[in-house]
Amino acid sequence: MTRKKYTWRHPSGRWYVRKQGVYFPIEAEAGTPEFDMLYWQILRGRATEARRSWALLIDELRKSEKWRNFSPRYRQDLEPVLLYLGERIGSKDVKLLRPVHIYQAMDANRSRTRFANYIPVAVSLLAELGKRKGWLDENPAKDIERAKVPEERRKPHLPWSDEAVAKMRQQSAGLPRLIFEIGLATVQRPSDWLRFTWGDYDGETLRITQSKTGARLKFPCTRALQVYLGALIESMEVAPPSDQTIIAREDGSSLTYHTMARVMRNERKRLDIEEFDLHGLRYRGVQELARAGCSDDEIASYSGHYQKSMIVKYAGEARKEMNAIRANRKRDKRGTNRA
Image 1 (spheres, helix red, strand yellow):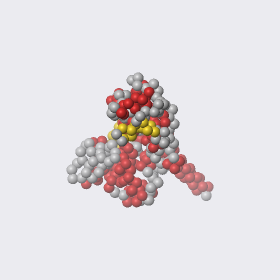
Image 2 (cartoon, rainbow, N blue to C red):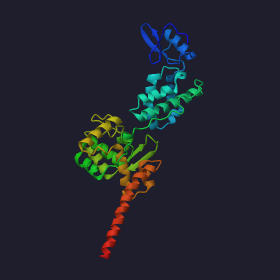
Image 3 (spheres, helix red, strand yellow):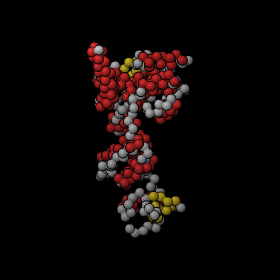
Image 4 (cartoon, one colour):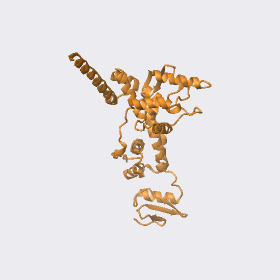
C-alpha cells in the first residue's frame, strides 16, 4: 500500500488519519477501496455517518412489521443491544463490519454473557435487512459462536424451602413482602411481576399478557395474596389508579427489574436465605400446585408454560416427595396391622 500523507499506524497495526492534531481510526483493511474511501471522507469532514450505516438499519428495523410481530419480551431483550450497536457502529458503513469485530464486542461484554450473545443476534437481524436492501452480500454474524456461561454462574434455581417461605411471612414486610407474595402466588416470571397493575386485579383474580410468550392469562389469586393486597389497599389514603403497577415505589412509580432484584437480594441476605432467588419463587409455586394434585395441563394454565419440561422437572420433584410420603404411610399401616 502506498503510504498516504496523513496516515499513522498504531503499533497494534490499526491505521488512523491525523487531522488537526486529532487521530481518526480508519475502520477498514489497508489497501482496500473502503480504506481509501474512508481516508478521503475523514480528510474532507464527511465521515460523520455513512450513507449505508447501521444506524439507518436499526431505525428501519424498529419501524418494521417484523419488529412489531416480535414478543414484547424479545423486543425488550434486543433494545439495549441495539442501543449499544448504535453508539459504537451506528455511523459506520455496513460493509466494514467483520466477524472479528463482533467477537471483539462479545469479549468486551463477557461479564454479561446473555447480553454478549444477543450482539450477533441483533447484528444478524440488521444484516439480513441490509441484504434485502442490497447493501450487503453476506451476513457477518452468520455462524458466530455463542459465549458460554461460566461454570460458577450455572447454578440451578432452587425452589424456596418451607423454612424460607416461613421466614419471609414472619419477618418481612413492606415492598419485599409484596414482591414475595406476588411471585409465589402468580407463578409468573419475575419480569412479569412488575407489569401487574391495580386494574389487573379485581379482588379475586389477576390477569396478564406474558411478556415472553404473549400468552394471555387470568387466574385466581391465592388466599394469602388476596389478604395481603386487601390490607395494602386499606392502608392507602386513596385508591390507587388502575394503571399504577402493584409493585411500586412509595411515590407510586414503577420499579425496574434491577431495583426489584436488589431489594430482594438485600432482604434475603438479612434473613439468611440468599440461596433462594427470584426465579426460585416461580418453581416453588409450581411445586405447591403439584402438591395440591394439579396435572401438568392445570399447572401450565396457571404458569403459562408452552413447553412443559420445567413443569415436569419441578412438579416431578414434588410428586416424588408426595409418593414417598404415601408409600411410607402404607408401609407404616402394613407394619401396624402385622403387629
